Image 1 (cartoon, helix red, strand yellow):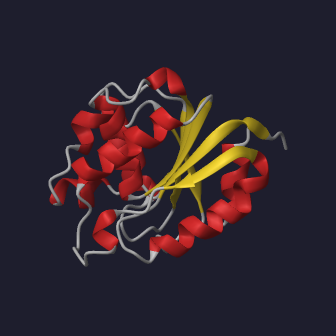
Image 2 (cartoon, one colour; image 1 turned 120 degrees about the vertical axis):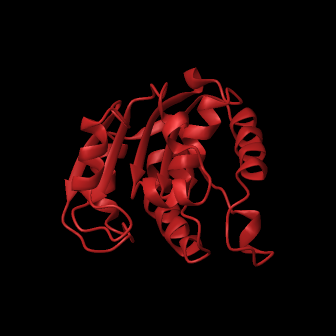
Length: 181
């Protein structure tokens, strides 16, 4: 498996503060493979809000990207996938800085229900992206994502269906195959 020692990894976790632990485990797992690894800790985790403030987190992500030298790889889970699409759609981040994305657990219905324009943000999304989705993810099954792709959404993303009936995505060996390819 090749290393991405010349690339910086940014980890964008899911919405709930339980994702802090997922992000830290991912950081530990992938640290040896990247020049740097940055976890974005969401403000709403510390102020007990239920939902991410996408505009605040967009500013933080933009600042992080602007402080890093070299190319960037993004590992995003759940709401982190929407944040990535929003950042590129809003043009606050130069798409040429991002060499690839690996998304796990895309949450389209949850995002729409909570007022995030995930469909609009994904229309011009051109970053090479692998989307890993559990076949029985309670947030969105892989077959649901496949139907959305047939309907014209998220078409630029390569969908990888894996076995799983949760929204955890803790198999970092599986993620590694796509993150380091």
